[in-house]
Length: 447
Ligand code: GLN
Image: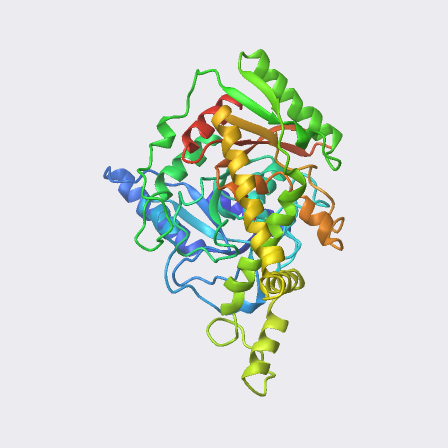
C-alpha cells in the first residue's frame, strides 16, 4: 500500500485516480496482515486494486466521471467489488474514465484527460483510461473496469497491459452503472494473464441481484493456465485489409500469426463480410440503450440538480443540459432518435437484425476455429486532441473491439510489441462463449 500510494502521489499528473482511499486501504492492509498471521487470508490477500468510477462501493462517491452525479454516494457495493473484498483485496481508489463510459480516449471525462504514461502527449485510450494507466504506471496491481464495446481492451492495448472482457453474463452487473445493458460487462486490466484469471475466478458467477447473470459453475481459471494443445486459429482477413489500419500494427499482428504457424498451430485467413456494419450497428444499439438507461438522471433522484429552475420541466431540462457533457448528450439524442416511432424500424429494428447476423457469423467461425485473432485497435495511442473534434473518427477506433461485444463472446487484448515511437501494440483474441479459460491459457502461452 505504501508503495502504490507513493507512486500515485509522484505520478499525480497522469490524472488516473479521482479519489484515493488511503485510510481504508491501510486499515484493510492491517486486517490482511492479521489474517495472514493466523492463516485465514483470502485468495486475493494483499492485492491492491483500483476501481473505475462506474462501480458502486458503499459510502463512497460514484460519478461515472460526470457532473450529473456530483455529490452522489453509493448506497450499496457492487457484487464484483464485494467479492474482491471478501477475498481480502485492498481497494486503493476510484479511477478516472470517460463520462458514463462513453469514449475511446478518456477525453470525455468531466475531471480532465488521463495521460498515457509512455508519452504524456497521448491518450491512454478509453473509456477505462484511468484504470489502464494505473496498471501501466504501477499505481495499483490491477484495475476493475467496464467494457461495452472495447473499454478495457482498447486502453489496455494503448498502455501495454492485459485487458480482458469475459463472456457476456459471466460477471454480475449489480452495482455497475448502466450504459448499454445488453453489451456492458465488467472487465479486468492487469499486468499479466495470471492475475486476470485469478480475479475472474473470484468475481464471476451467479448472483441473486442480477437476473441476467449466468448460473454456470465458475472454473478455477487460475489453475487452468497452461496448454500444450495445437489449436485452429482464424485471422480475420478483412481487418488486415481495412483502410485505417496502421502499417506497424498490421506488421506486428501478422508477425504473431506467422509465429503461431511456425509453432505448429493451424492458422488460416477467414472472411468476415460484416466489418463495415460493425460500428454503425454498435452505435445505434448502444445509444438507444443509453438513452433509456440515462433517463433516470433527472435532477430528482441522484446527485446534481440545477439551481436555476422554475418548474418540473425546467428542472429536468436544465439539470440534464448542465450535468451531462457534450458526448453523452449527443448519444442520448441519437438514441432517442433511433427509438422514435417514425424511425424505430428503419434503425433500431434493422440494427437488431444486423447484430444477429454478426453474432451468428462470429459463432459459426468459432465453431471452425478455436480462436479468432485481430488487432485490438487500428492504431497505437493517438495524440490528445487528434480525434476529439471528429466523433466519427473516434468511433472508428472501436472497429475491431465491438465484434466481441455485439456477439457476447469473450475477448482479450495482450501486449505483443511496440511501434517505432515506442508505443504499445495489442493483439486481440476471441473465443467461444464460456471458454474464457481457454482464452487465458492460450494468451498466457503467447506471452
Ligand atoms: N469506445 C466505445 C464507446 O464509446 C466503447 C466504450 C465502452 O466499452 N464503454 O462506446
